[in-house]
Image 1 (cartoon, rainbow, N blue to C red):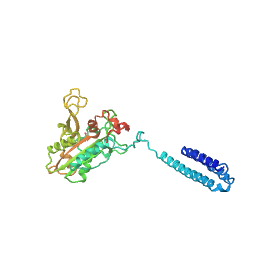
Image 2 (image 1 turned 120 degrees about the horizontal axis):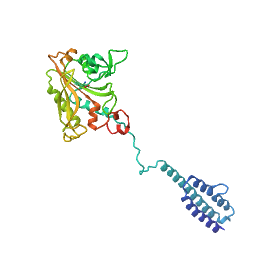
Image 3 (image 1 turned 90 degrees about the vertical axis):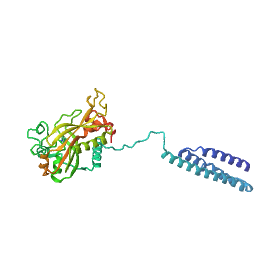
Length: 346
Ligand code: PHE
């Protein structure tokens, strides 16, 4: 009888070890626990009940064997439970290195902001300060104080946004009124640049927009000559477009500078070698900005004595210099807020 019992217990051990090793889920675990330890029908309970039928001399041996099985079942179940918990934890934090990475979108400066910042940095490195004016400006500062004659076409309603019911005001057509505001408030030496929005009644197309951006520059001091203007702009152009780019000045006209000039840069696309070049239209030169020596009348309009002081000024379109630097073919792309465009810069 005792031998029979021991044999069965040994078999139960082997089966248990096999089954407990195969536990994969909570359900498997519940089933095996039930099968071996249930108070009513559990295998262990069955052996324990059979102990009372074992003749007294064999009781210790039989009891020992059942107890061994009990310890084996308990440890086996504990281990299986721990294994399941660990498995669950690894599943939850499982990292699959073969998945494509989730790329967090990182913000970038808009092309116009990046270009403005670059221009500011170059001039700041030459000792300029950044000054700001107003987008809604006095007609007087936008035109009259800047020496525009009464009949100048840009004073026409066709070209400029005037403000209904406020006849003295308009949306500034250029950043040059910042020159006036600054000179009225500060005494020379003055050295500023002023970036900002400007407004003109233009229909939008690839190279025009009713709202665009300019950077104005102004320097006033004693003994300032045209050569200072030329040197300053050359430095800027080389820093902005590259050392291999040359600049030339061409006579022009602005009411608030005398003499006045346009600055052209050598074509970075064809270097003057392609008569069909789209960027320079075969001329080898690209028009970049307007500039000149501050008109003596403008200085005296701002209570600066033109006999003592002289200065230069320049103004450039931010969209224009950005389009040329990055070969952007249509200005409107800068206002469309298309991330495929915006994310290429800044
Ligand atoms: N204000 C001029 C324009 O908008 C540019 C300019 C600025 C020219 C300063 C000369 C000096 O075209």
